[in-house]
Image (cartoon, rainbow over all chains, first blue to last red):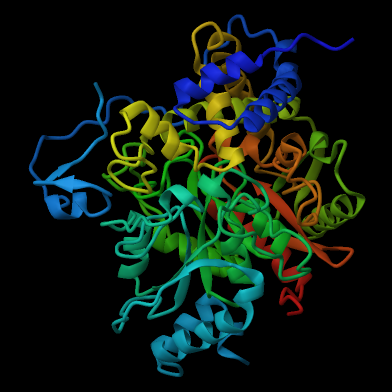
Length: 98
Length: 471
């Protein structure tokens, strides 16, 4: 029996919108198909009883790496802007937001 | 012997003694690149800058750097159309350390886009080819670095390893690759894909070169918040130790379905060699291995979806926009330049992190990650090292797995679990199967890189393989 699809094409469209990735129609179909295949294969994790298990966000057990707030040399404004496609008066130029 | 056939260690000695000059080294390697790289495609960018006389331990040895590690003034594309024009204004800490040690960055190597892949076919520019058989992939994602080292187009290289990206190509191309303990090598200047998993590691012709590279790149860096502050070690000092009494664990799961017979045969030969040298092996179990692949991919994709949000085309990278286009459309249009694998992972990661699915996917994977760590902790109470194949197969053919992401992901089945646990692992050549190199993977508890180098060196010394590919 074919299992229920986890991700519909509409959901792929929504996820692509949230991820800010413009997809062509063909890509939507392909990604929907592959997402379902991948998530189906990943269902093996459902076999495990994880009730009492704590999540591992990070393998190095360190908390709050802090230091004194000292001024150090960093990139100049010119260097920081050097890779931007559009700049004006020392600022990045962003597309119109509203 | 030709200059390019010297190991990094030998070349550095010859450069220091004056037998060769650094210009000789650059010339010899540039000649190799000119001769072979049109076909092999190890490099995305060859460093054409005027070079100045180097000083330090490496004294002008030409080193290749994966193209997701920032090099000041030298294009760093991450194998992506989005960054094809990106010239970093700073050096990654590892690059700074290499330069301080006198290395010359000879070029930037090809890779799967944003390090997402296991064959280097996901590069936005071109696939690299395996020097042992040009119809086969070199592995990935640090495929270009492995090809450069194997084909004598660099004396050594850096790669990055998020789920096997140093070890897999090392295994496929017959070189040594080390994934250090998480936190041992600075990630400052490494373009982030999945922060909690990745480390930069050396890719070298032999084990001594690996130790030499670790001496240069390992160590605390205040620019990386996850860098671990501990005393520096001399990794070269581990090479001549014996392995008498070494307890070796061989988990049966590493020889599961999909493991080629030739790979299993060569790996077992090495285990018996270690036994003959005084090691004691026992078969054991690592039951969590079957869960490592989905756990890894869910975590890596989730982290990627967050990390790659920065590519909006505004501060760096290519910006795809028409006049007057609004922010959302411009942002989405720019990111349509991602390749298919990157799109798929970012979208799947966004899914795994989204409300209603977070607990069932991302959080669940993090919990399984805990079980995987504990599984290794348990084994390391009984064993000093764990061994198995690096990859279940030898290098596959170009195009063979491109259309099937799940088949491609399976390549990583024996390597991803190491990144989840944060422990170190080395891949060392241990033989051939139908003419293609096989890698032995050796794993140890955190910060036991020295032990990995000792064991790998014993294998290398016993096998004395000829690892120069027939070019």
